[in-house]
Length: 187
Image (cartoon, rainbow, N blue to C red; front, side, top):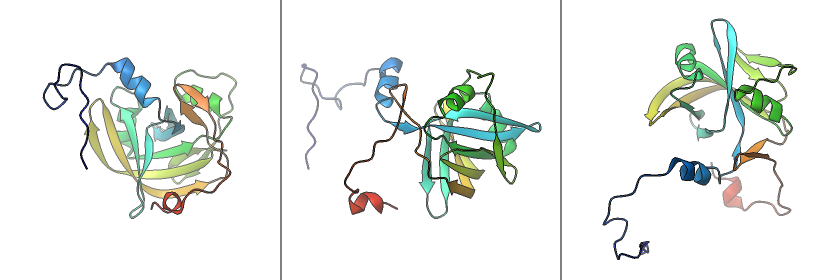
């Protein structure tokens, strides 16, 4: 299979020239094109629950069960995760936008926070799904760190998830036809 080269009108192909620097605004716009679930990552530091909104979350492995979160190195949560050695992921449900905003740094004064516990790890009550993990390892990823979590508890509560797309909250609309078998059985 031959890949067509994109040309800029000079006849040079991307392999012939140095890549221009990536514009941060364009980077965010392009990455925002990917709809993502909204999670709250939580841990305990100095005996208090600490949490932040995160959309850089994914499954890592089925065997062993692993998940991955990406945390900015300058985030207050970053050193807390390293110190604690564990984290929770609460997949926010539709209509939990206020929780997302609260843990993204815009505190909501009248918000009643309720946490459930999986051992030593706090998880938000009424989330669409929850996961408790011990940090198995971590990897440097530019201005972020990828934390790999060895999952020790998880539960799905059957609530539709909260999504974010182009910086706006969104919801899921399911197709009327079932997904092809290859989509359902990708594990």
